[in-house]
Image 1 (cartoon, rainbow, N blue to C red):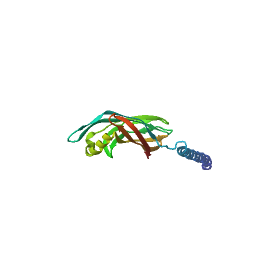
Image 2 (tube, rainbow, N blue to C red):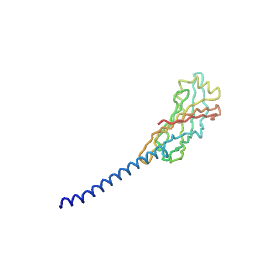
Image 3 (cartoon, rainbow, N blue to C red):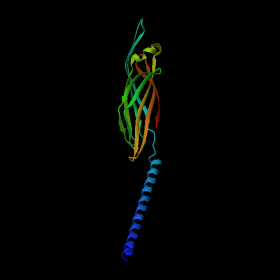
Length: 202
């Protein structure tokens, strides 16, 4: 009799335990489904965008020595690039790089400071690119021709790697890229025109 009574008390306890486990499992599944719905709708990842908002140049007009044709350059290109984060979570970026090219040859570089762009916010990144004259030594004829024509074209490429983290669970890595073509007028050393394209690598 004691055993039967013990079993009768034990069965409801097991049923309650199984019911609680089942309810907990259903709640967990519903939470996972809810998070996935939010992830693929409200929290869908969007590419950060870049925009060149300012370009200026400092320096002096190049000097030409004869009879051995040598050109001395003292130019620095200052760029300000706006990076916009359209996501509902912050975009944290590590140190980036900015490269300067003349006629396809790298002639300068600079670091872009790391930072954090808030949700739906923007940040202006500044970089100074100084032309390294020794790296143009192999293309003096083209440079001389451009200077005489009154304008020299440079290309810049700015790379900003980072990630967006949703709910502390989902991470998206992205690299925002901005590529610009800047034409500098001579002998007044002014930016005559600038054109940029932007894209993102995931």
